[in-house]
Length: 133
Length: 94
Image (cartoon, rainbow over all chains, first blue to last red):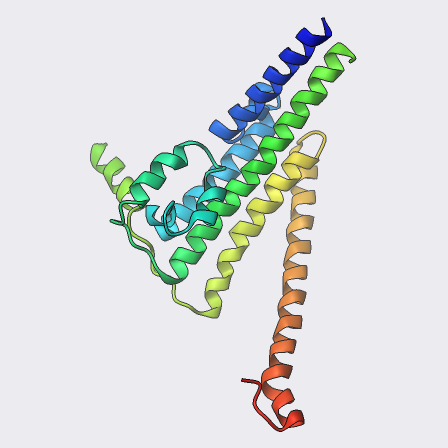
């Protein structure tokens, strides 16, 4: 019984975390926190899009800017596909637009990481609250 | 419709022009707003417009004040090292 609860609990937390990663705010939305989900989702997507608009898709560079790419990947798995476009080298970007674009897209990713952790924590709180475990 | 979509997509393939000037620092403002909104969204118990806006504005203000103080301190250190220190030691800092 305890083992089943633990397994279900782990699956529940994993799903909440994965949803939060796949679409920013989706983890909170699945937990019924709709206002929080829309606030998080809109803010993170806008921040990411501002970064892409300022620096172009070239700021997502999995070859020349690996640490930035790691943070950008926290936005969503979709960044992986954008990274493949950026890695072609057809969209070069230098100077201040590159800096600002990378900072915006990476900060958006790190903010989403915070939201993923928060969604998992809230899922844990909800599960514990329901079962009283 | 397809033309509009293509134009929007195309705008993400070329970087915009931003000069290396003091005015480019203003780009930190939307970033500070995003950080404050998301941070507060994860911290508050329930999200209601007025209290949430007030708390977020307070955090934005706090971050901006702290950044300004940090900038002033760093500027002061840079000024001391590059302008004052050479006169005191009798040699250039570089």
